[in-house]
Image (cartoon, rainbow, N blue to C red; front, side, top):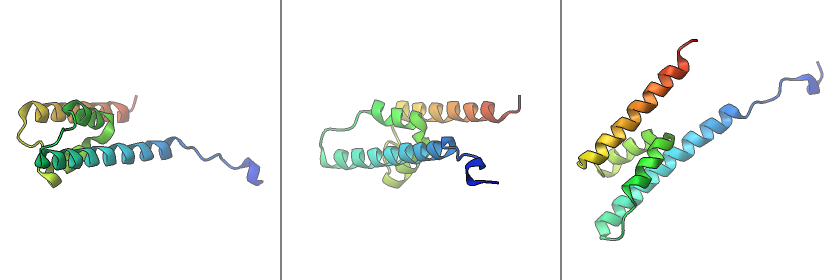
Length: 100
């Protein structure tokens, strides 16, 4: 078998993993940055931005940041939205893996 006849490397899974890493790193970083700004009394990052990064597959990073920085843990509307995003993502994963 010649090298040209080998199966091509698919980049789909590599891109998916790269995106997941980026989204989670961004969520974690933004939560930390927002906590720092809150402590210093500076302008904050919008909750919408934090939730959008969670929605963009950064939910594990968002939950890790909440625990790590003790940030956004008592804000009920925010917490409710974050859990709803996690639930919707869980349902989407289950639907994706169920055999057709």
